[in-house]
Amino acid sequence: MRYIDYKAMKDFYIIAEVCELFEVNMQKLRQYSEQYDVQPQQDQMGRWGFSKVHVRKLHNTIYKAERSCCKNEIMGMKTILTVKQVAELPQVSIPQVRRMIANGELSAMKVGREWRVPKAALEELFERDLL
Image 1 (spheres, rainbow, N blue to C red):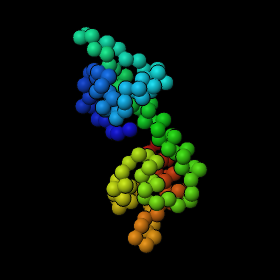
Image 2 (cartoon, helix red, strand yellow):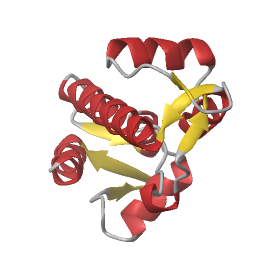
Image 3 (spheres, helix red, strand yellow):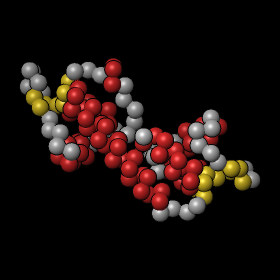
């Protein structure tokens, strides 16, 4: 789930816009809205969609669930991970993981030409971001 600037949001989003905003298809959006009890509504022009408040609620709920799921996946992993394995968990790109290492946000060690990330460092990152 990507970052959404809540201050710059419109008051109403039609379903197609929410799908684009969340980067999901309509079936997945329907599944999320039913799972988290956030139902689409009709605006004054008869279009179906979600109000700003409901988009924020749905986004926050999905984001937290995904982060929690990723954290649970980490618990069953090996002690040391490659950059590619780290990038697959929180659904970020490999260059983003490398930037996090370079910025000191994620501790890692260099083995030959490749970076390796200790599982503990990844758990610490999730703990810091979840709180």
